[in-house]
Amino acid sequence: MTYEVFLDEVTTILTELYELDDAAAIKLVVDAQDANFFIRHDLRPELRTAEQAKKDAITLFENKQNRQKTQEKQQQRLREKK
Image (cartoon, rainbow, N blue to C red):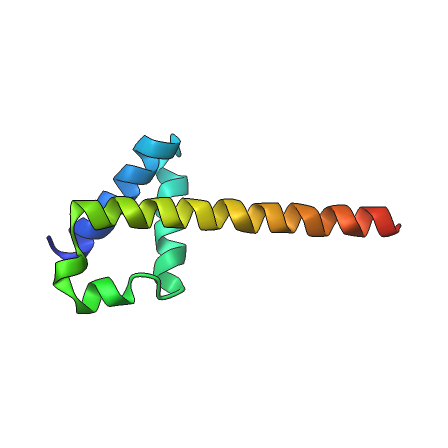
């Protein structure tokens, strides 16, 4: 599949697995692109499979959840110091 179709597949999987709305799923994929998460997929067409799209969607979502938890813990520590 083309690089663009692959990104669409990742976005679709995010909406299906995690019930994200389209805008949130697109933002997650665009942010990942900006962070060069998909650079190897662009260079290696064999990585653009439905199976890889699902793995990447899960990774993106889990990374997002981990960042949110870290931010919440940092905010909690700041409130406790006050």
